[in-house]
Structure formats: C-alpha cells, structure tokens
Length: 155
Image (cartoon, rainbow, N blue to C red):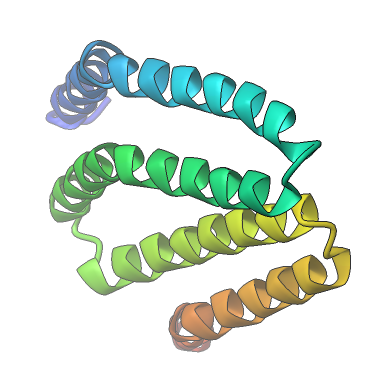
C-alpha cells in the first residue's frame, strides 16, 4: 500500500460516517413531520374528495408543496456536503451543479406528474414526465461533451 492512501481513505470514512450520523439525528424530525402531515392530509383529502374533488386536489397540491418546503433544508445540506467532497476530490463544481440540477428536474417533474395523475389527467402527467426527461438531457449535455473530449484525449 502506498503511503498516504490509508490516511485519506480513513478520512473519507470518518467524514461519511459523520455526515450519516448528522443526517440521521438532525433530519429525522423533518421526515417525521412530512410523514405526519402527509398521512393526516391524505385522510382529510379522502373525506373531502366525495363532496368536493376540486378542494381535494388543492389540498393534495398544498401537501406536496409543504413536503418540498420542508425538504429544502436537507437538500441544501446535501449540496454543501457534496461541494466539500468535490473540493476534496478535485472535481469541477460545474459537474456537481449539472448533477444537482438534473436530480432537481427529475424530482419536480415526478411530483408534478403525480399531481396530474391524482387529478385524473394521465396524458398531461405523461407530457410533464417527457418534458422533464428532455430538459434533464439538455442540462446534462455539457457532461456528455466533457466525457467525449476525455475519450478523444485518450485515443
């Protein structure tokens, strides 16, 4: 084993363990809040849906927005952690930004398509999913260009 490799791998293991512990302790309450609000909201939605399907849909959208709002703290912490890891690994922040944007596009399009499906609009939901996929590919195009130029430099 080369000198310094075990030190850096041990450092990464400690760093990852610390992050996992922080997430499990600090953000578990966010998951519990989201779950409680979601279950209570779904019960209310089922009761309301019989008499007023429009209000039930609005409540469903509100519940989804509350879940997104509560998740933003966790997302910002994950982004900060990934940025620090990219600095340690020497990876360009542009690569990390593209990956985070692509994941965000996937989450937003999935959530929007699920709301459309709940409203009984499956074709609109499919359109939202397709648009999300196309936008995600478009955002990731610079990564494809980087990979191709890396391959060309090897050949």
